[in-house]
Image (cartoon, rainbow, N blue to C red; front, top):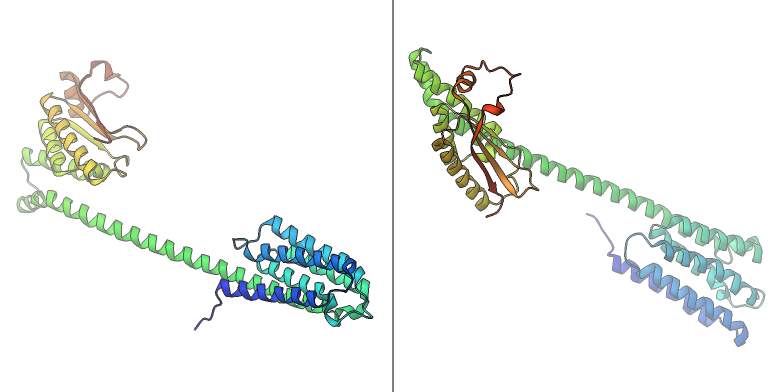
Length: 350
């Protein structure tokens, strides 16, 4: 079982402990107003520095607050010590030594340990120089050092625990992301395998029945199916049932169809994707009617206004035959002989 103290409770206890020093200071004020004025000024300064150190928001104390608290720790011994006579003063007349220690402990807990150690070191050296070595024990200077050491160790332990917690949280988040990615990959793979099986299973069964002895029409259909399977990999977000049917219809007519999915549709909503698929299927029908020999469909990057670009080219008879036979010369520039049968950009939003 783990026990913890709420931050509000810890802040309240620190405030009460700091208030105790002010009460002790009030009970030991000198009777002379001239002698009491410096001590009252330090009491006000200490109250302001403690309030800022305790109640300023954030885990790490701002630098300006830490500087103000350190200045308070330096000023209080210098101002209060000259008006206190150790021979006749009450027991708690040196309240500022414990008060500085308490304020510096707050700074250490608020992740300003260097400022805290400078303040306690100055107060301790000043007390020894003012009252002698007995100040370490009788006036409580050594107690401030001990409390600050404990607070520093506590702050270091808390920082270490926080780092470990952040590492565990980050590792857990990475594990969850990895698991979600793996599940998405498995789901996507199952969908693609199912789609591929539905397309290829009849032809595979035919190949088994004929022991691979297919007629020319069946061989051509096998090539079309192989291209359709490639479409499932290269153009997955472009595909719908209507798009698949229109692509197959173009290929059976002899056209070359290329689908390239570069991720331009990933950020679209389901309704927009359905609209884009419907417009793409209609564009492929128009390419079929325009007798396009080469149809290229490509997604557009996310920042563009268009989602998909469809280009249909009509080749001359000689080049169409060369492209079909795979004997076209790569060095020949055939663009001059191509005519654009279709050019269409499908908008990202309706």
